[in-house]
Amino acid sequence: MNIKNTSEVKLVAEFIVDKILNQDNLGEKILFFVTGGSSIAVGSKIAKLLKIHTCKNITIMMTDERFGPVGHKDSNWQQLLDKGFDLPQARLIPIINGHDIAETTNEFNVTLEKELKKADYKIGLFGVGKDGHTAGLLPNSEAVKSQNWACSHVMPPFERITITTKTILKLDEAVIWAQGNEKWKIIEELRDDDIDINTQPAQILKKVPLLTIFTDYKKQ
Image (cartoon, rainbow, N blue to C red; front, side, top):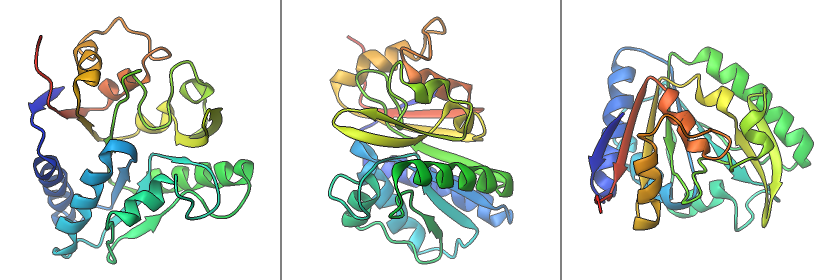
């Protein structure tokens, strides 16, 4: 686990872009997971930086989504698009497709299994919440324990569809963007191996072979 102290969106975006381009230069098939919330600015910047390169062996998916109609205002994917996320040379696979939540979750599960098998290099951008959640893996939710690649569950005010811990464990690399002093306690606790994943799902990210955290954390 490598912690980089910064609040510069550009730095984390350049870090991830360098990783992707290095793998693209090797001819590898890349699967990149983006997330919503406070990390949307990072995802948008990554797309802008990648757009000027010829990287074409890349598929982009969401880590999680707030369920609703296609393009609804609370959708993580829609908010990402609204912030200028655009990458014509990539395969973009949104989660929401106009079907009901059960069918959408099943289709996401099938797609995840297929894309994870096809990819040579799998990297994910994640945020963390002050409660220790990451992606749509909320504390003590069924998504943490699911044996599928994807899971849906209700956590007010949203129905959520998310990748699971099983999917995260297939990644080669994970990057966390965690800003704000309300998240500093979580950054400290990520150093602790005794915290249960059910109560703090972000702990699962430490099991990914490479984990880098970009944070404005200041030790108190």
